[in-house]
Image (cartoon, rainbow, N blue to C red):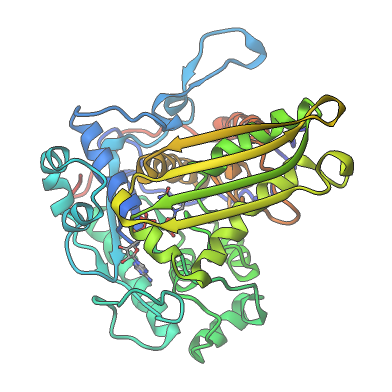
Length: 455
Ligand SMILES: NC(=O)c1ccc[n+]([C@@H]2O[C@H](COP(=O)([O-])OP(=O)(O)OC[C@H]3O[C@@H](n4cnc5c(N)ncnc54)[C@H](O)[C@@H]3O)[C@@H](O)[C@H]2O)c1
């Protein structure tokens, strides 16, 4: 079932220029987070806590996973060594937000981490003053943009974001930059005529075309500056012909959509087992209560529609009702998210799964997951940043389909995505094996005198 590396995406192989500069000799990596809310600040604070020896990076393959030897013989090698990944010490964080405050203020407001841990990493968070963002109330209807760029024309907004990226690169002496869209979920928007090519998109931006959402302007700016781009949210953002064209042209890896963290992660672990056992499935009812900023945004039905699209797609693919209409042809699949402030970031999800066994006898499975949204999301962001950067160093560009392991609605070059977690994991490992020979161990290099604020 796994694709050969040569077939994987049409990720083209162009060598990206890389500037060395990190303490370990690896290129220093800039990670620019668009939207410094719960998931972003939990990533930044978490990396600082791990660097300070205060906590462990559970959930991050790049920090803990071992690479099994090929053919089953020989020692297991840490993935970080196998791919010569950037060390945590060599990551510099920055970002944009439309709300005021330092990363510390925004982390404290998100209420994910305990005050004691936040205090311990406060210097790292206080050092990050997010840059003013761009906001369009048509795409985020329940939030006011309090700290936004003065430019009102979309092309000029992109130019201002590009200048921010260049300035960050210079100030922090980074070799590579990964931009990650972690902003609030934008209202649902299908692919339209303005998204078809770079030429059309640029003209449309100059004309302030309404179907160009803020997240797309960030993506355009990032790709024009040669950055990798990760879409952690359900919105289209880089899943557009224009962005695929730009990513190929400028040697940038792109990936998305929507981090596979809680309920969907469990769904893509359980559903393949049910199908492999040829058990029938009459219904799957999923509901959640969530009280963080994401929950408040998703309380808007237009924003929830984006999330619903990404949450619903997995089951159909895994169960293959077109092959097994008797078992899965009449499945009733319902997903709901309720905004419930008392729970904050500590989401609770319930799944009621109506399965059908031998002779048509019905049975039920109940799953009750008491999770922590941003605690699940942060390690995925770390992996995606480090792996995207490694892929770019290895000369890969365009859609990195092999990162589908991390997403609810994996972006593909064309065709339908794979959702089965086990298959996604095998593809990920195949991709690591294909990438490793293209990555040389970086040579220690002299760092120039640029002042660097690091977490
Ligand atoms: N938490 C999870 O487990 C999880 C999982 C998958 C996906 N996501 C997605 O990640 C995104 C962020 O989630 P969160 O929990 O951090 O939300 P959040 O509400 O805490 O943070 C979002 C931040 O984005 C900022 N923002 C909004 N629009 C912006 C813009 N145009 N430019 C710059 N900043 C902007 C907001 O001011 C806010 O600080 C959401 O889209 C969510 O659906 C989260």
